[in-house]
Amino acid sequence: MARVIAIAAPILILLGLIVGGSVVLGQLKPKPEKAEEARVGLNVFAEPVRRGDLKITVKSQGEVRPKREIVVSPQISGRIAYVSPDFIDGGFIQQGQLLVRVEAADYELAVVRAQSTVASAEQRLAREIAESELAIQDIEDLGLENASPLARREPQLAEARAALEAAKAQEKDAQLALQRTGVYAPFSGRVRERNVDIGQVVAPGQSLGRIFANDVVEVSLPLNDEEMGRLGLPLAFAASADKPGPRVVFSTMVGGIQRHWVGEVVRTAAAVNSQTRQINVIAELQDPYGKGADGDAPMAPGLFVDASIEGATVHDVLIAPRAALRGDGRLFVGLTDEGKLSIRTVDVIYSDPDGAYLRSGVEPGEYAITSPIQAAFDGMNITVLERLEDGTIKTFEPKAESTSDTGTSQETAVAVSGQQGGGE
Image 1 (cartoon, rainbow, N blue to C red):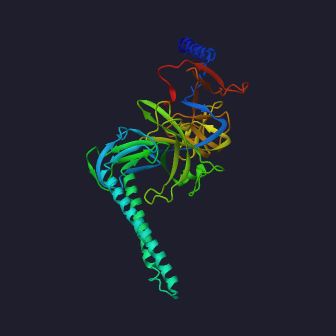
Image 2: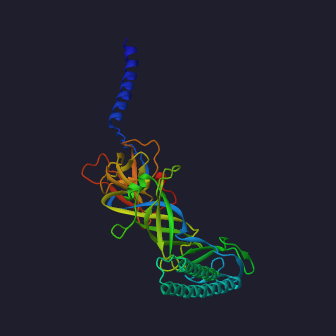
Image 3: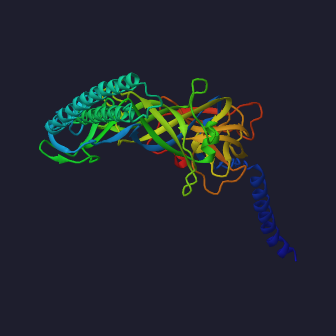
């Protein structure tokens, strides 16, 4: 027994030392530091919301048309003897200028014949006057009373006077036809087309060409009911000195250069289009080939132009980038201090490519997110980025959860790299 104990005791002591040493070493071993979990957040670009004024504008398109355009036609028939060199496609004409002349020989002869008829009628009237005076003298010498009008030659005298008036009317008609051998421009303008030339026989009412006035051009701009209300235009609008129409800026490409002209709305169409349910507003530009032109580029008829109609100004509204406005009237706002996404419902007044104009739902200085975000939800982790004017990008680092002595987020500015976050 003593021998067994003598053998086992050293073994037990050795095992105890090993176990005890392991426990002591385990207690003395320094604990590993617990690393904080890295925060995961989507990088998104945003722009600050600001206050400003809203100049309401409505966009439309239309074709430029002359306000006055006519078909040139003669009132008499005959052979063309003269055509003005300005009466060509694109030619400039002045009011009262002779455009076309018909051969006048036949009409000059008609005037001579009419003048001869007038002379004969005057001679007959003079004879009838003399004979009537003699007849009245004879009646008085004979002492006749109650003589008939025929005895006094009153019907013959009236007939002679009527014949003279008819002859004079025929002379005037012949003179008028002679004057109409010349076709004159009723206004200053330009020639759109010419359909005749020297030697061609024309009939009354036949088209010789088309001309239009160049003092005013107009554009018919279709608008819907909402756009009419935005501009404050009634359905039966007519501009006046006391109530001028909205200003309109026309633009289009001419010769590879973007051109602009400034006109105004002068009236609305008489009825709503039954197919499109829109109403046309008519805008005019004065002197399109002179003072109204953009340098050497007139707003010529036939151009298809874009029109920006300027309405009233709404003061002190909230302005956010248009890309930040979501289709259902929501705005994604980046909370820079918390690194969270806040989804807001906003009251939208108007939006255009320049921005979204709001009444409420967001505060000035808050950051509206312009980057697309899939499966967005309120409180989503994000990192807000702002692109500065100099091309650098400012990153808003949310404050760490363990840091309680700082009240604002940390901001850093980094140079623009080839890869940017947020999917902008």
